[in-house]
Image 1 (cartoon, rainbow, N blue to C red):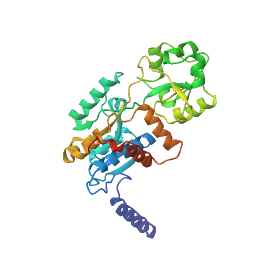
Image 2 (image 1 turned 90 degrees about the vertical axis):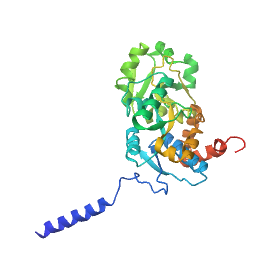
Image 3 (image 1 turned 30 degrees about the horizontal axis):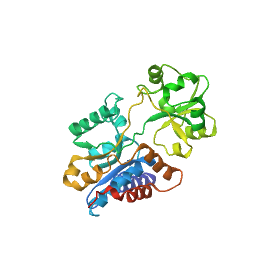
Length: 309
């Protein structure tokens, strides 16, 4: 009986503690109640800090958003905005949103994908998917510069002549994925690789750099592309869906605070794929915090102020 009382006491204390807690990161301490979501990737965190800093800059410091970092997926980000825990996402991707949150078919035309994404979020969720920052973080095959020059490789179609020669490494999740995975790739391009292995995406770049692989499937904005002087082959049949990156916000928050809309709009078209590679490299390879990478980039470009401001 004494043990039972102790157990009940522990349970009551635990419930009392839990009742005063919220999920980690999903609480906004900003005086304005404004929070920005980002995912676990370096890229997401860099660009999300850009959004934060731009909002602070163009509100003259009157708006200081909090950051909700390390969210595991775009769906979790979306739910955070739906629940009101956040009002802005630092970056969302057309290809991810179309087939994920919006539950639509993949679209290979970047302009069509952006238009569909923007229209659906506006009509279905009263949210604004901005035009792209200027970079597209999608899958692409890549080789070392030495291999590109030796075999005269420029496009993915050029690989057809070397399917039995190259050791190929691809993302594990892509290998059997329907729609835009390896089975659909074979059908679209009309060839398959004799020596292909599925592996963690984080390992393919190093394996390519050290010669363990001849060809790898990676992400177009990865910082290891410039670090290892890799050559990204053109997806000449436009097989891979576009993953153009854009800021994102609720219409409610940008109507209440027009400064937020102004700040995020100024980021449109400012970050090329090559620029994003270099920003990711600075953080991943040089060890600079994403927030500092973002701040230095914005300072270098004077926060994209127009002349006379």
